[in-house]
Amino acid sequence: DETWRLYLGFFLVGLSQPLYQCTPALLSASWFPENERTMATGVALNSNQLGIGCAFIFGTMLVSTEEDIVPYFGLLSIISTITFVGAALQFDDAPPTPPSDTARVIKGSLEIKIPDWMKAFGGNGNETVGGEKKEKVAEAPAPASTEEPTECAVGDIAKAEKEIMSSLIAA
Image 1 (spheres, helix red, strand yellow):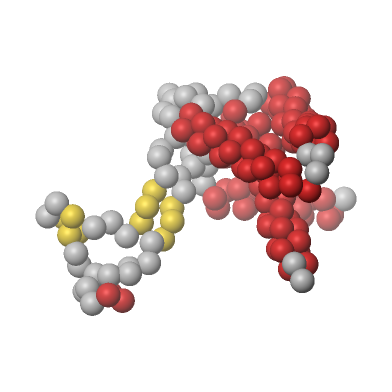
Image 2 (spheres, rainbow, N blue to C red; image 1 turned 120 degrees about the vertical axis):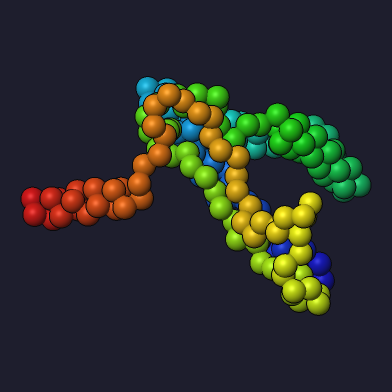
């Protein structure tokens, strides 16, 4: 019984949904000024639907027998991989200058804690790179600098959110 393959495929497709449904709004907020974001988000979301429609059209044109299914999925895999690699090589994290004040606030540095695996393999965690102790935190590249301030304190944002919520509750 090969039914498990079908369920595994559905599961993997389900895992990808947050990526293609949530990413357009984030991209438009980072790359477009406020007056163009709705159009950018709409175009990105509808491009996904257009791609699905093309897959249905070309699928019916290229698959006429059961033996045509595997080569068709192979072709889709090759096209998807080439597109992904091309986009990954050319895509920047953010534009050189933020398109709006809100894009300036959205950007920041991403810190990822890297576990010290050397201790698990007999190291003492004090290994050095080039004579200096190795860094334990990987940081994303800093956003493009501008003459205006680009950082907003998280505490200030939380305070403003509480004030807004309390004013809404009181009203």
